[in-house]
Image (tube, rainbow, N blue to C red):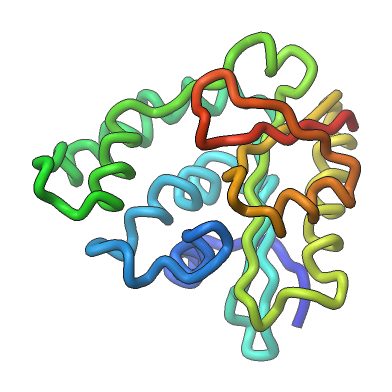
Length: 200
């Protein structure tokens, strides 16, 4: 049990973690008709295109129960996804009508029009990350060790700073990041998101 490199074989388990924490840190399984949608946007690209900065928290049976996923250079990552990830997902998930499940529709619209971070943010904080852990492996300092593993790797690779997006409603997550010296600032693109920043 503990932190190890994420593997391609973990994909289904990590997608399940993403769904299981996808409602501001709580289980989103009842919200989505397609249970893989969140994972295809927020997990899959990192496993495929940034594997050197992907770790899993595994249980005693070596099943992944949490993850921390990062990117050294957000601009380069966004450029890769524009040609090698989003087109595949768009073919698999065409835009859906207004009558569709609103949660599914929001994610499908996102993958058809993915967000790009502004250059003003990326100059000082070019790296970014996602971290999620299922409730049964939260606590005990596990999340902090996961986060520290990634932050150390990004710093060793030469990154001057890292950012992430979080829902303003997810007060527990905001408190967690602030404990690790992240600071919050408004998002330039969405009122439904805070940007957390940290120098490395």
